[in-house]
Length: 70
Image (tube, rainbow, N blue to C red; front, side, top):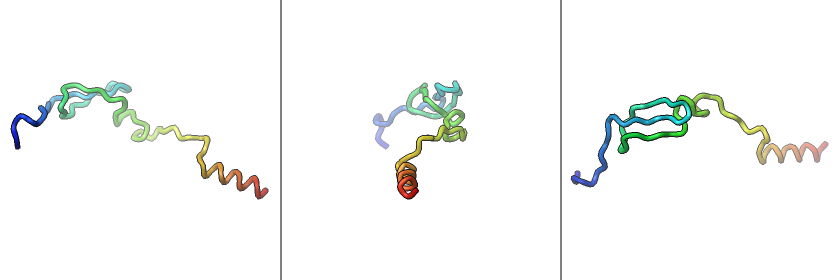
């Protein structure tokens, strides 16, 4: 490997979640960083996702076809 071209890796770098304030020790090229959501509070991982209730194109099409045939 060439010397002097690689970034410095901090083994004791900390990552802080802005939502739940959880602190993780993850090796990184920056000493401290902040993320919006982590695995403890992200809706996809927790299963508390807000699903769209208004429906999409397929639902609107089916509704129009059902109204037309009725």
